[in-house]
Image 1: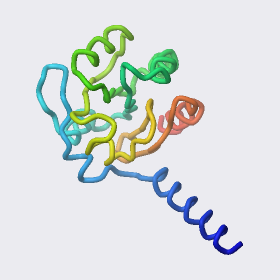
Image 2 (image 1 turned 135 degrees about the vertical axis):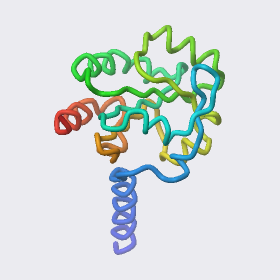
Image 3 (image 1 turned 180 degrees about the vertical axis):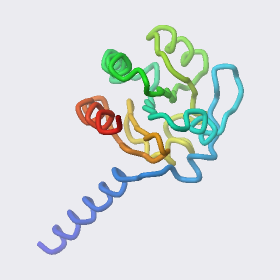
Length: 164
C-alpha cells in the first residue's frame, strides 16, 4: 500500500511540476525555429517581438486531425480576444506542407516551424506530449498556462479572461 501511495504522490508531483512552469527553459528560449521567409529565429526573439502583450501559442501540425478539429475554436478565441498575439509553431515534417496548412486553414498570426519536429530539442524543451498544445504567456513574459490541449478551451478562455 505504501508503494502505491508513494507512486501516486510521485505522479501527482511530476504532473503538477510540468503544469505549473512559469518560464521557458534556456534550451527552449535559445532554440531556433524556421520562419515562413526561410530564416531561422530564436524562440526568445519571437517572444520579445510581442513583449507587453498576452500571447497564445498553438503547437500544431497540418497532418494532425485534432489540430484541424480545433481550428474553429482557435478562430473563435481570436475573435473574442483581438488584443492577444497568436503564435503558431508547426511540427510538420516539411515546410511545404506547413505553408499549405497555414493557407488552407487561414491561420492568422505569426508562424514558425520546429526544425526537428515532435521528438526534437524544442519539443522536448516545452515538454510536448500532444498536439494541438496551447501555452499562454502573460504581458510580463511569464507563462500563465503551460499545458492545454484541444479539450481545454474553457481553461484557455478563463485564463485569458483573468489576464485582461
